[in-house]
Amino acid sequence: MTSSRHCARLSTLAFALVTAVSCGCEGMRYVLHVADGQFAVQGGAEPIEEVLASGRLSEDEEVKLRLIVKAREFAAETIGLDAGNSYTEFYDTEDVPLAYNLSAARRDALVAKTWTFPILGQVPYLMFFDEGYLRELEGQLSAEGFDTMTYELDAYSTLGIFEDPVRSPMLRRHVLSLIETIIHELLHNTIWRPNETEFNESLATFVGRSGAVEFLRLELGDDSGWPEAAEDYYADVDAVNAFLLGLYADLEEYYAQPLSSEEKVAGREAVFQAARERFATEVQPRLNYPESFAYPADLPTNNAWVLMYYRYNLDLGVLEEVHQATGRDWSATLAVFRAAAADPGDPFAYLRDWLAEEER
Image 1 (tube, helix red, strand yellow):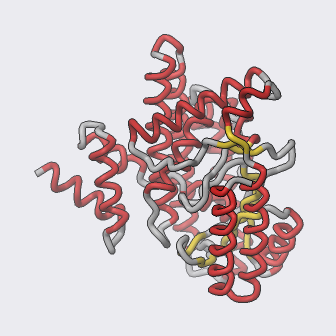
Image 2 (image 1 turned 180 degrees about the horizontal axis):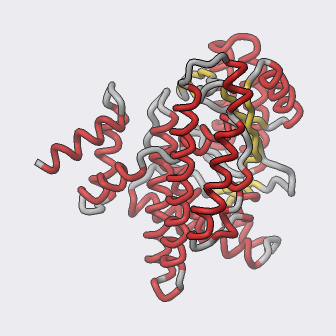
């Protein structure tokens, strides 16, 4: 074991113990379970250059891993993100799921279940390495009357506390998604506002997307077709997000009615069904890649599902306007985003006020 990895393990343990003490008995169980999973990741990570030299990756995996190395360099040197030693190592899950995400929401309102931890602040999701533990808590939340949403994770950020390796399931992503993910997670290492999940995730979505298109243009060139394909793909993403934000607004209006909780839950299916039909007839046929965006036509009647998409795609247009106002200078743009994160008020309101000042 190298001394740096030993220090990382000690840091993990110290962080876990401090957090567990702050969160009580159930919190202690959860955080120690996360620390145990993180130990396995940190202890099993290998330098990327050794993995590439080993010859054990497929040709496609090797190409993607080399792209990650370049994308990390781009994120650090061109965008100015705090890469630290993240994505300099590789962790092979050996085809076992890396981790899972769980979120929950009231069934009669667009209100997320939240958990509070030191450093992270209040968050509307939990990460699990143990699927059995995940299903146990998922069952408890469902029995308490919450909608729940779970999915498999192939990447997550430790906010720069630890050295995040490339996890092998990430190599299953297509190139655009892979590059976006690397930049997205490194943004979390760079700017994080406790208790503001929508700002944190939407900011990472914007920087990840914009950075991915810029990287592909510089690395592969316009003639490769990738930049154009990326812009077409993200145009589809914007159209789907606009539809989902519309559904969010429809549900807010529906749940605001003077009905009992039971009546709201019983009647909400009509709102979801109308949205499914609208997507299938009005949105999907106009997409550049309709086969890649079939899921909203079968979206579940589930508030946690709606909130998951909402928190990653809020006010992306405002973030783009800021980037344009700085002349698309990443250093200047990140300075504005940092100021918004540091401001005691609403970070999105700060950005709108900043834009109004720029226009004067």
